Length: 93
Image (cartoon, rainbow, N blue to C red):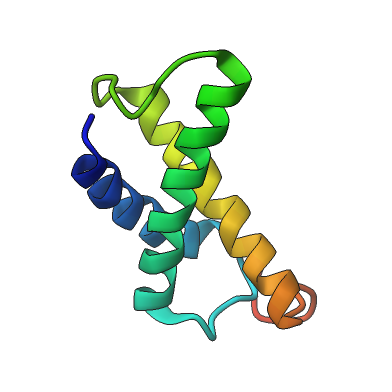
């Protein structure tokens, strides 16, 4: 996949991360999409380092989608920790 495909996939993964990570409603949809793009790129890089593959050049398959979503969730959680937001006590879990 090209970088453009990872950016689009990251936008979708960021949108999904907004549903998966509770307690970060202050980011909004655009914030999740931006963090999802960063998370997809970070997740693709980490998958390449950990598994010795190059997922950016691979095809769009379930593993790249899972990689992008995991990367987006990690970036959203880290962003919440850096911004000092707590996941406890905010809305339904």
